[in-house]
Length: 218
Image 1 (cartoon, rainbow, N blue to C red):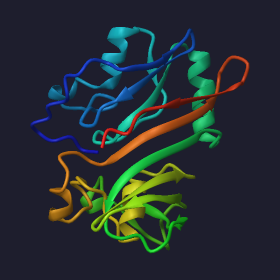
Image 2 (image 1 turned 180 degrees about the horizontal axis):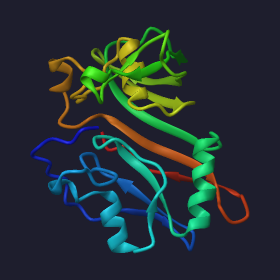
Image 3 (image 1 turned 120 degrees about the vertical axis):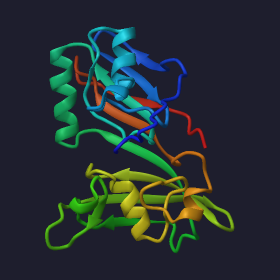
Image 4 (image 1 turned 45 degrees about the vertical axis):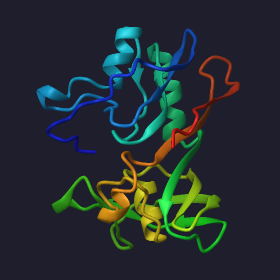
């Protein structure tokens, strides 16, 4: 995501979820870049803060600036390679939660819509059946009110903005989404209501499955 010119990240302290000799697991707040941007004023980010806490910490995967939730950093090259391959080969389990606009037509399903970058309007993404890359998201409705619905989202692939565009295609723009939601839905929340609440991987030493959970803040 392209950060605003007046980028002012939240100043809350680094929230450590788990730590051992191989990795550091943190809870990223909404509004904080995962890695620094190119402009001088974009130096403050999750990676910078994690390195202040642990100089050996290195980013393995990313969340969009406005998405909050679980991020894993490696503490050494072996862990970085091991966990990075799990993301690349889809050996991780991820659950996001979203609060979106509208009334759900069904309780669960699979969204299978290919995505590509909308180059004239990048970093926006769009659905393109001819040139898009495969993108699949499973979803489950948790509850709904008169105007909103809460979903658990299970991304099978990891395309840029995949969850936002897939829910939009279902008729459910995410509250607070400054890229894809109509103005009244964007204004319905002071933040993007998308949160990486669960992540499970194989531990880089021994291979045991280990999971991390973050409380949904909206």
